[in-house]
Length: 291
Ligand code: AMP
Image 1: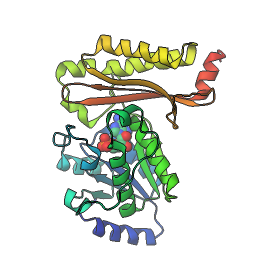
Image 2: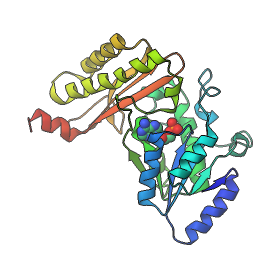
Image 3: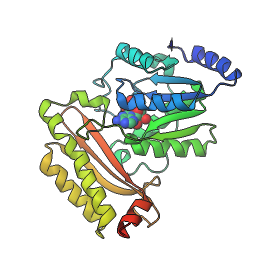
Image 4: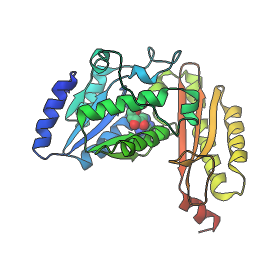
């Protein structure tokens, strides 16, 4: 595995790889790698000749008072996990190299951000889209891999790629979970023992909601309220949101043929956790018909 800090050096190497007609799969991350990230790498290896991972904690996507300084960092461990997973190129740029001066141009996400994490983290997705745009310019991948754990991020990035005619396929990958259902997250290590014990209740509540969405005739608003109570009775944390929207449009007006996302976010003392379940339209219809 080759390691790069400089964007220019990386671009040069990648251009020479591309000239050999090899395909490039790219996994952007903020590090503190876990099995969720490594699943993206695995998928990228299956579909591409060369796999590159980036580790960059992007200051632009953290708001004032958020956990940029406390975000877990473990670059040496990350390098070794990436190497074991068969990553070819490891990109760990410094903040100075990514943002050498104040940006003259940045991406502003125009839709899909007035709900879920976008609503409670103003500017977050502008920061995500801007850094992903920069990384895509540096790497110029054929395919890039994102986890559905951050489903709103997947929607935002797919829209950006479409809006700007970017020649990259966005591959959305399933959520990897602990045995008790907790979605893997770099932030999980910031949970206290008691919080870690409570945390899987978020997914359990979403499962309960997904079941209701498939089988009952209750409205999304009713189901959101029921899931909210389920969470609040089991977790001593501030609930940021529980919401049900169409996916990927992230709209509150949901048609029969729309896929649905049921998503939640909770603030524990030192970690904000998010999770979601996608309920495809066909599952809802099949279950309603008793198939
Ligand atoms: P992060 O380092 O948290 O920015 O995540 C980098 C990428 O890994 C994003 O596309 C995430 O959605 C994805 N990811 C993080 N956790 C998981 C998980 N538990 N399962 C699948 N993908 C994940």
